[in-house]
Length: 251
Image (cartoon, rainbow, N blue to C red; front, side, top):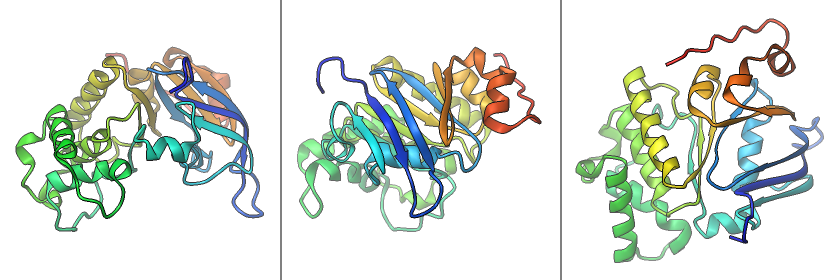
């Protein structure tokens, strides 16, 4: 990573799907190394497009995106990005793979498809399972686990490549309150150890409690704010319209 390069940087980014209106329009922002940032916005606001651009799955129609100072695809190939997909804890995961095999697959970007995993790959996968508290589940079939356990499996998979950036797309969906509490405690530990975290969520109260800073998207970047400022009437109106009430829960 170049000295002082942001973890993520968007410069005048617009993205269109075909002839449709822009999913994102003229977005400029920078997420510094070591940040814990939340992404909020209504359905259709471009949050998924924002994530896909970071992952290098799509390229901007206009403008540029860099991740750890490199093009997103290059950053992903170097293992700089860990990604936990949406609703992974709810998915009907029937593929006959053990927890250990799922987590080890997180090393594929570094090793290359079709190549044998090394002892170093297996050590890194074991470390990721240990960090997420699932070391004892290594030989279990992933499809037999609870939603909360499966969530940790895919976080471990994302961490197995030693990423500099962890992206989570609505990871709290479908898990109970106790599991959610443990999950965010785990994220805080990773963040305290220097990992940059980007969290997408529809739950504003979760964002206000967990994230350090928040990016507000509604096709354009409406603004960035602190969790305390997320309840500001002007920001909520610009994001969601006039009929929105935000109840912030203090803990």
